[in-house]
Length: 173
Ligand code: K1U
Ligand code: ZN
Image (cartoon, rainbow, N blue to C red; front, side):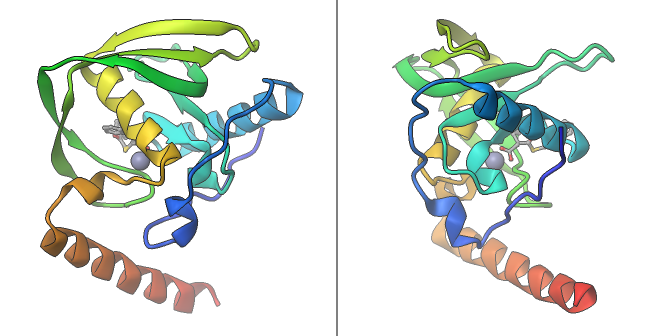
């Protein structure tokens, strides 16, 4: 397993649409293991493959608070049904460091996906899990949570992150 670098806004790679995986083989399992290690190290509660520069439809999530880890793996996740009721949650994103905003999303979603063993599964998620799944599926479409904010707020955040990146690049070089 390896910790991989997480791409941050404004990296155009994050805006790509990710491609379906044909089969969950050992390469995809290695990718998911790396994603999980990267997510735990960050730390975060979810990660999409595109965030580490791999444009494949793969996401990992772990909402457990205890020592015992409970990783969830979703390959080619598809939303079958969304609830009509919304949940507002203060979201963050490892690709938009230091920024948080209240985002409204359906409070329940029903998804189909392939699991770690290439088996077709379905899941009815609610609450934070539903929010996190939708946030990660957005990444697969090149969408970031800041896209739901006003243009003014988006521009402010992108400018701030661009400046931070420039400062960091000067320190590293
Ligand atoms: O960048 C990502 O996609 C991960 C993101 C997932 C997420 C968070 C909140 C709402 C929806 C989706 C994060 O994990 S941000 C970090 C975070 O939420 C967290 C970090 C440490 C402990 C608990 C939460
Ligand atoms: Zn994110």
